[in-house]
Length: 254
Image 1 (cartoon, rainbow, N blue to C red):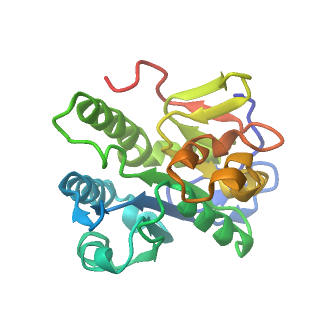
Image 2: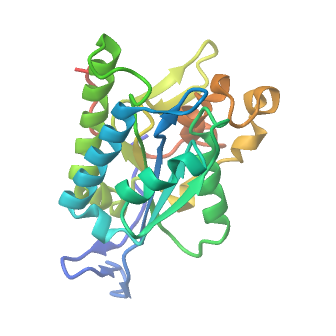
């Protein structure tokens, strides 16, 4: 998994230099994709914990410098008109927001947004995927506390420490993050970053077939609750696995 590919060296001044030929190249643009929600239930009711998580995440993105460094910031929301005001309040002006509707009960449609963006992307890009993990659980519950610890560890390594992530992608890794697991599932065929918070190169992401080709999606639908794990395992669904830098392999949620 850790075999490196030849890659240009990123300089402090913001350009890359090919070590062999001395050619100056521009850094790969950074594309952030964020998934979240604000409302749950019928009729829709504000999920205060989800709102708190989103606000905390936007603060970390801004304070880390990553939000300013990103060329694009895409947001997918499980909701519709009822979520517009909150989304406009929480997300920065550069956010390109898409509303999946309240029938969407998974992160899958935000991964479809990645697929659609890659169809029009020329050249390389570095993609960060993050989401409001733990939003549907009470913060004070045992799982809520577990999910908060889990999210904040992933956030530290992938957002606060984003410059290291970019440096490692520059060095040749194709995907970086926390809790990389291999040989999972009953048939040992699943490989993924547990928690679904990671960076990957657009060139690698393009090798992965559309999420719509997955049997679970065909059987249950793209937005179905029972299809939700497809977002987590998509990184390992291609013809080969990425070269991975795993920043943390210890216990999840501690």
